[in-house]
Amino acid sequence: MQVIHCTEAQLDVLSALFNDYRIFYEQASDLPACRAFIQQNLRQNRSKIFLLLDDQGQAVAFSQLYPAVCSISMRPYHYLSDLYTTPSTRKSGYARYLMNHITEHFTREGAQRLTLDTATTNKIAQGLYESLGYQREEVYITYHQVLETPI
Image 1: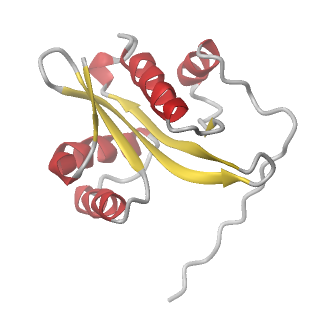
Image 2 (image 1 turned 120 degrees about the vertical axis):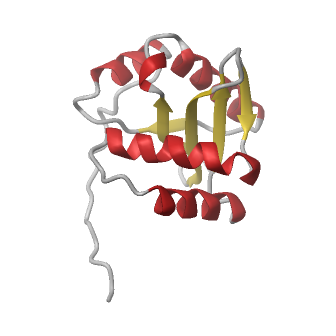
């Protein structure tokens, strides 16, 4: 297995995986929009994206993380926004391998923590995260206000 810290050289494969990831979360397929989004993230260094290749060099998983800062600890952390493995490779250890890689990567960078969300229905992901030492939030309550897009 090989983990690649992505650049635009991986844009095509990332766009396809990102589109599939969004479909998994019940969004409409939109490969051109996915490509534009990933390309903009890479060009503007808005996120760090990691691609996992299997032993045959096939892309089987990706993760996308966004930088943030914790005011309380006064240290950077990363928000794991996206983690996806192809359906045919699930339960093969690829997600665990990729999670361990990004944990080691951001530990070396001096990040204070990794934070993530997952769907309440995604019990498999919850089991993975908890087995890796992630703790379910029980102190803070999260609120969202969806803002209207200006015309």
